[in-house]
Structure formats: structure tokens, C-alpha cells
Length: 96
Image (cartoon, rainbow, N blue to C red; front, side, top):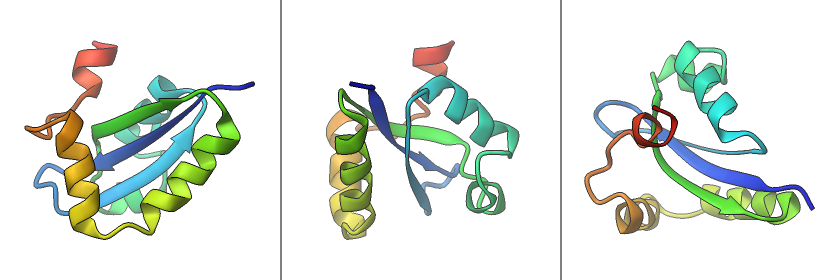
């Protein structure tokens, strides 16, 4: 089975979220930060990784991404803050 990552990117003010799934988190976050990750992330400057989850089955990761996209904003905030209470950019810590 292929490992997947569900992740959430946000802007500096944490007003907008982008939820995605990938099999290579470091590469995908770098793409977002360079502005080539998606038009949505570029438009809203969603360059901070504020949440990620490792899921050891890519199909389950895709299901989780779709589930999170349907959640209310408050639910997403609670999920993010359960692992990252200060909502800091985690990419600096995990990728250097």
C-alpha cells in the first residue's frame, strides 16, 4: 500500500484553508510555497502548512480529504488546534 498525507495549508492570517492529499508531503508543500501548488493556494497566499496526517493507505487518505472538505470551519479549526494549538507553519519544523 502507498502512504498518503492529508494536509491543510493556510494564509498568514488563518482566514482561508486548502485541504489536499499527496504521497509526498515535502514536495507538495514546496510546490504550494513556490506558487505552483494550485491556483487557489496562489490566489489566497496559502503558504503555511498548519496540519497534516499520515494515512498508510492512499485510498483512505483520499476519502479523509473529501470528508474534511465537507466539514464546517469550526470542526476544521478544532482538528487543527488539537495538534497545532498555535497554528504555526509546521513545514519549518518538519522540513527545516
